[in-house]
Image 1 (cartoon, rainbow, N blue to C red):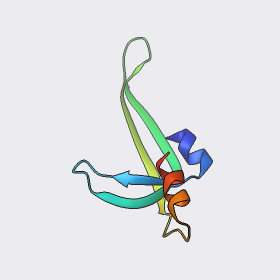
Image 2: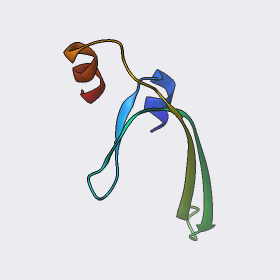
Image 3: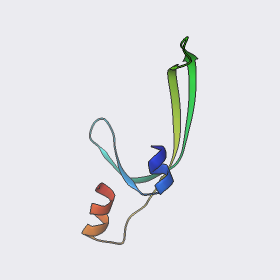
Image 4: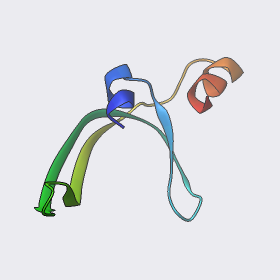
Amino acid sequence: MRGQAGRGQPMMMVDGMGWVWNRWVITEVQETRTLFMADGAPRQIDFSMKLESYGPDAGGLSSFVGGVF
């Protein structure tokens, strides 16, 4: 996710039921590690991300394909 946020490229958002929620851009990812094991590895990693709606494209098929791949 952090890599995608750095690119600023819109991606399709699809929920667990298969509903498509158009294209969004990940603008920020934050991570918090807690509940550490004896060796220092986190047992729990919480994250949050900020999204921005990309909006409609003026392009045709090429803009659609560019967002899928």
